[in-house]
Every structure is written in structure tokens, then in C-alpha cells.
Length: 208
Image 1 (cartoon, rainbow, N blue to C red):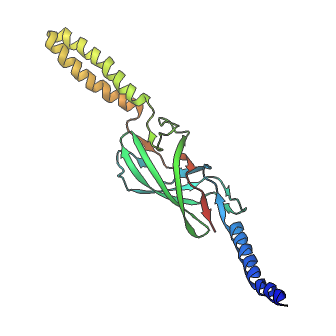
Image 2 (tube, one colour):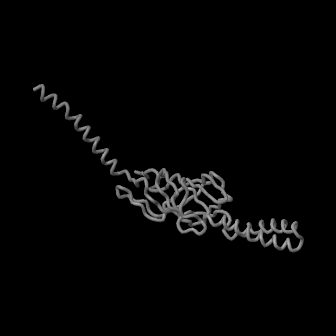
Image 3 (cartoon, rainbow, N blue to C red):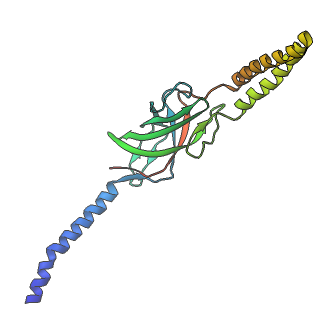
């Protein structure tokens, strides 16, 4: 008799445990997740000029494709992303994405820019920390322009005023050549409105 009473006293505890497990399972099913490492294509909503923007400047982008979570829920194309400029120089930008707006919520986002898609004069592959860089030939254009135009200037100056004229002509020619070379290479880094970036999720993207 006593044994039967003990067994009966355990029923509420077991039932409560089963209910808790069922609730946890339902909660896990309701949690949408896109795993770390997933690549997401986005496009910038406004231009970012590396020469003009300051660290801390906010910017926006939007997704260009629908994303499907583990539970079947989706993030529609056009979902808004928000981020900030982390650092900026004439020829490079480092962007940090912070959150994505979906299902009426602000979802934390930890992602790195892994690629620039189809932009002229911009390196397709980003740096180790996701920095976006000007394509290498811009600097080479400036150097070649300085060398070639400087040589021409030296020749003209030498013909007119000897060694002193050659030095002056060479210096002026080099400065002009560097400017022309940089201009033909495109100058500083500019990401146009609509520039497409590929992001790599560094942490899972989760929402209820």
C-alpha cells in the first residue's frame, strides 16, 4: 500500500517534467535560425565615399534574396540591415553590420563583409577583417604616371635650361604624372548606391 502511494506521489513530478520538455521542444521549433557561415548578398542603399565618411557613420543596406531559417520561416528579400563605418581611409573602408529588421523586430547581426560583387576598381576579395579596398592598379597608375611624365618633363627642361631645368622639369612632370595616373585609376574608394556585398555570418542569426 505504501509503495503504491509513493508511486502515485511521483506522478505530478513526472507530468511536470514531461510538460517542460514538450514546451522546450516547441520553443526550439519556434526559434528561427540561419547558421553561422551562411553567405548573404546585400546591397547598399546610399553611396559611401571613403574620403568623406567618418568612423561611426551609420548606413543601411537591404537583402537581395529570401533567406529560409531552420524552422521554415523566411526573411524576405528587401529586409533592412543597419550598420556603421568602423574605419575609413582614402582607399579602404571597414564596415560593421549590427542588426537586421524583420518580422517587426530588430535582430542582432554579427557578420563580416567577405566579398564585393562586380564593382569596377574595387578588390573583389576583402581583407582579413573584412576591409574593402581599392583595386591595386590605382597606386600603380600614379607611380607609372609620375615616372613617364617626369621623364618627359626632365627632357624638355634639360633641352631648354640644362641640368637645373631638367631637375625642375622632372619634378613638375612627376607631380603632374602622379595626378593623372591616380585620376585614371579612379582616385579614392567609392561604393555606389546599389553596390552589392556578400556577408558571412560570424554567429547564427536567430529570431522567434
